[in-house]
Image (cartoon, rainbow over all chains, first blue to last red; front, side):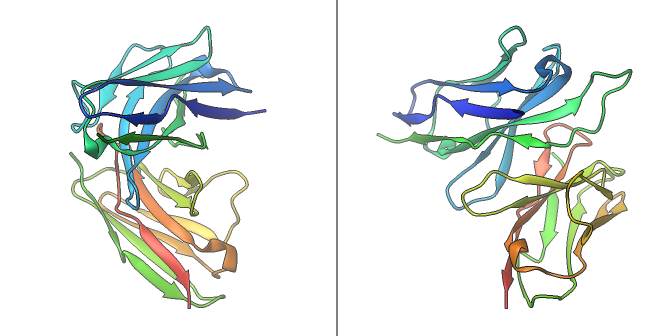
Length: 125
Length: 107
């Protein structure tokens, strides 16, 4: 079954850290770029970070750069997001999403055609 | 960062109506634009990629167009199950950015 499932969310105090995970199954994880996207309560979607299929590059939103780290383990089909120095404004549902398929000679469009159900992060004292 | 401006922010229409949403990019993004549908309590769902390509399995009443800085998303005949919030998203440059969303309601 082709799916993504996030875990690791919860309630955390401001300034603390949290690590999110995303387990992939049913497809060749190592061929795809992977993203984190978040959605604050009642708000729109905000792209957070991307990691290339081979982990050779990572990019971040300005709002999380220097605090969040995206990583992947292609041997375990797992994507991670290490979040440090958390702020109240980081409160959101965090989704992992599958991006560009790079299994061919060139990568296909970076359209997020598979999403997990999300994991909720609340930053509050 | 590239700013994506969607309009309208909300829209009320009747079943069977033709509905169009626009998305304006702050700079030329070629056709590197996607459209997503999000229903309450659910993750987003990809409808259109590369501005005008229909994702597999998506009903043909959905379509997209445009290039450069101006894009459109159209539902040719609104159905009750289309009630959702719709987002455009550019992937020409990181950081990728989404529009603020258009909430579609049935009149």
